Amino acid sequence: MSSNAKFIYDPDELNYRFSDEHPFNQTRLEVTIDLLKQVGALTEDAILKPRIASESEIKAVHLPEYVNAVKALSAPNPTDEAVRAAAKWGLQDEDTPFFTGMHEKTSLLVGGSLKAAEVVMSGQAEHALHLGGGLHHALPNKGAGFCVYNDASITIEWIRRNYNARVLYIDTDVHHGDGVQWTFYTDPDVCTFSIHETGKYLFPGTGAVEERGEGLGFGTTINLPVEPYTEDESWMESFNHVLGEVVRSFRPDVILSQHGCDAHAFDPQAHAHCSMNIYLQMPKLIHKLAHQYCGARWIALGGGGYDIWRVVPRAWSLLWLTMIDHPLIQTLEQQPLTSLPPSWVKQWQKASQLPLPATWLDPIEEWEAIPRRAEITAKNRRTQEIALLYVSDPKASQNPE
Ligand SMILES: [Zn+2]
Ligand SMILES: [Zn+2]
Figure 1: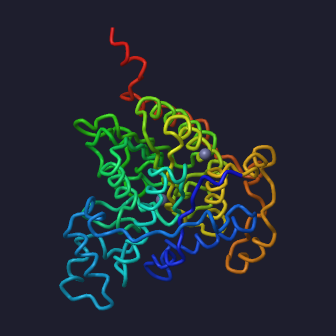
Figure 2: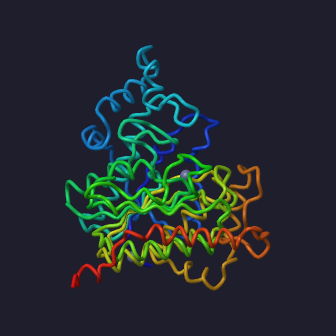
Figure 3: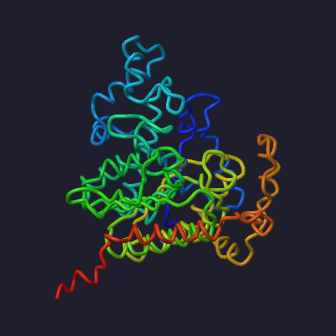
């Protein structure tokens, strides 16, 4: 097993929690880590603790006024003035309500993603994974969609300032990676690629295929909005086809990927109809591209994922197993219904109301096909072509005559 990957984690990250009832539940980190340990794929020497992001690192992306508002609302008893301003900063709705210690807890999550970038950019490891990060909806001046600070944007900005590297951001969450897109919308050295369920019916509503960047950054924003009820085959066809072209054209120095796993059919927050198979296939392609184009430099983050027992632990474990070239990945190609460790299932079944799966991938032969499959596939193909309209063919630009 290659050990040239680092896993960034601190149990204190579990305290990024809006309330007991809120769907964003970091218990999923514990359940994932336990699964990896039970298959012997996560050893203590691979784990590094996050650091705490400094205020100046956060303010490289977020407005100082916004950071000050987050800090004021982090007090156990925030002042009336701070509470009155909360809605204006996006911190008083059902999705992203302020909570005690919010600034400190989020600074740790941001620091985890920065740590992952430090490890990879300095050459200490080829790949690094920080599942506590991936808060892709936060905007420079606003909290949104369960995200207070945007660790992905802050990490990209940190890489730009410290290494001047060209960054390809790949967002596989079922929701559009809006916060990262808008932060780098005019930057030609940061390419944002987001595959997601169309914003027609889903938060945050953006991510149309026509959003392509502006000014010098035109063409370095790529959106692939797929239809509701898209299944594995069409999702992967869209992802593979468009991402392959984008990488060849953009030529990144490093890949930063966000691994929300809420496109699974079980996820309660969206309407995609994929199985665990896409969470085996997507990291495999990203891994291959990182080695092929980026000298192996690959930083991966967590993201959404609200079926925290049946979906997230398997999806995120597959990501880490891919990163370390674990033999189980090979096995799953031949035997998708390889069993999960029964002791893991037994232990966490006590906490889950729904029956836990027994196998790594899903028995999709038993799933009912979506009746509009052909129509959805055709629509997604049209979207792929529109997404690629302004992605230049590098061979063409080298030979202008
Ligand atoms: Zn999401
Ligand atoms: Zn590798």
